[in-house]
Image (tube, rainbow, N blue to C red; front, top):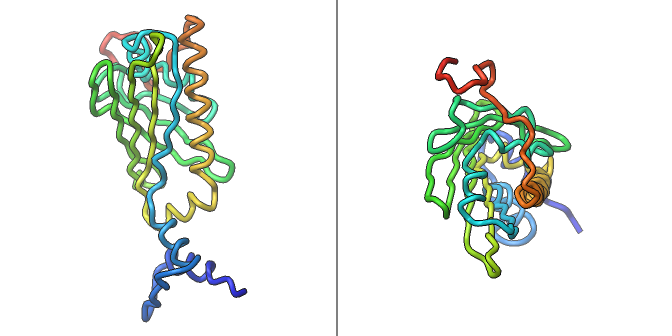
Length: 210
C-alpha cells in the first residue's frame, strides 16, 4: 500500500512554491496533517499529597524552589527577577529532550490562593512558541491535597513538526509525572529543598540590589 505521509509532512513544514496541492480530507494523510498543526498537549498529571492545600500552594508559588523537583527535565534554571514569589515572578530554563532541548521561560500571571496558579511564557528559537502551565489544587478525601498540573504549547507548523520528530510531548509528560512524585516526597518528608536558585548574576540576598 502506498504511503503518502512523507509528502504531506513536507508540504506542511516547507514553504510552498507554485500551486498548492490540497491535502485529502480523509485517511492517514489527513490525520497526520491535523496532528502536526495541533498544539502540544495539554499534558496533564495529578497526584495526592498528605499536606494542607495552603502549604502545597506556597511551595508551588515559589519559583526559587521549583528546580528542587523539576531539575531532572528542566535544566539551567534561573530566575528573571529577585522576588521569586507571586504574580510577575519568572524563570528561564531548558526543556530537556533526547534530540533537542529548547530554552523556555515562564511567568506567574495569576494566583488564586490556594486553588490555582497560572503561568505563561515563551520558548524555542526566538522565543516564538507560547507555553502555558496551570496548577490546580483541590481537597481530596482523608485530608489530602490533589495537585494537577497541565502544560501545553502553541507551536507553528515547523516547530510542531520538530516536536513530533523529537517526541517532545512524551518526554514532557514523563518529566511532569516525575516532578509531581518528587514534589510529594519532598513535602511529605518535610526535608528542606536544595539551595534555592537565584537570579542569574544577581545578588543572592534580598536587598533589592541587583
